[in-house]
Image 1 (cartoon, rainbow, N blue to C red):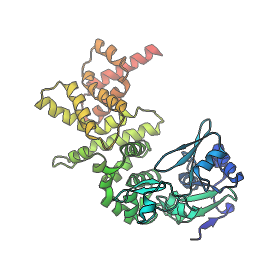
Image 2: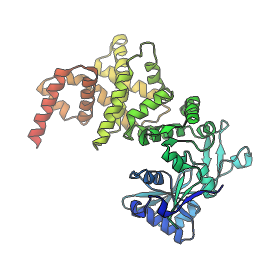
Image 3: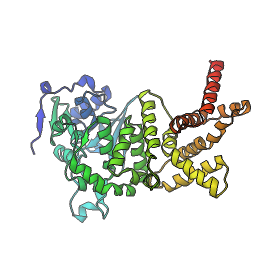
Image 4: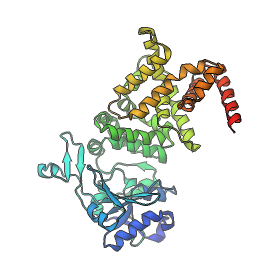
Length: 409
């Protein structure tokens, strides 16, 4: 397949927009005799006039050859072997051009390069190939564009620029096969559509609906990592809407999904919509929040509902019921490996809620000196405003916080 090549005068990407570290990697590989392209999301974002979050490089050098070029390099990964080149304030990821997954050849599927599970899930893939093969095996057309450091041209094997112009997320190849190979691509499609404000191409939308259940069989650590990206991408409210629209949400959080879809579930999405909107507000304001707080907000109404059942059926005190509800739910989330430190922090946020109803000077001192106070208070404030409750207590605690800030200023 002949690529569409756009010469430097006919596209807006400039070396001035590329980080100095990425340029050092590109030029070093070129000077060592290798092909080196800026690839993926960095090229996409530059063409859209966005500031890339990071820069990735694709090359015909193997990971071991990349390591010989750079002393500041470490090889990582087993499923996909990659090279990370370390600089003071940036890591440049370098991948070798990869070939397509072999069809039904057992000798290739089970060697040290490529291995597939019986249902088609790619477990390991280190079969190297050409730039064209590499482009064709990437996930979406808008992520398969190359910038050639040799002549500063753009290389497009998949009509990625056309889809950028049409604001469309299109899967490269057969969407059903690609989502079977790696179901996490479903979450990536949703994230890119939300961040970029693009539409998902119709056949891909249908394939997402058909294969969303495969997410339940994915690596728990990969799912946690991808969910963190969804929550913190700045467009979490849109992500949630797409997950509900495409029947994905219940396969990420089955217990929460079942609760929302219950006969009395009408109106329960209000809390979740407000949660994701609040997370986006914090992100837009540049506020750094603990990873536990977004989960506490997202799960909060469900945990409170479970705690109410425990208080009624098992006669547990309020704080203990909230702690038990939190731990029971997260133990069920074994498909998402939420770190124990995050789990404990979510539980502390929830168990702190009843204490905000005690408006006494002694309680103020104890609460404000607790390490989880701010996160617990932010949850309390969010819940009070969202559910229309505890207005007097919220005003009282806001006054106490302001007084404490004046004293410590």
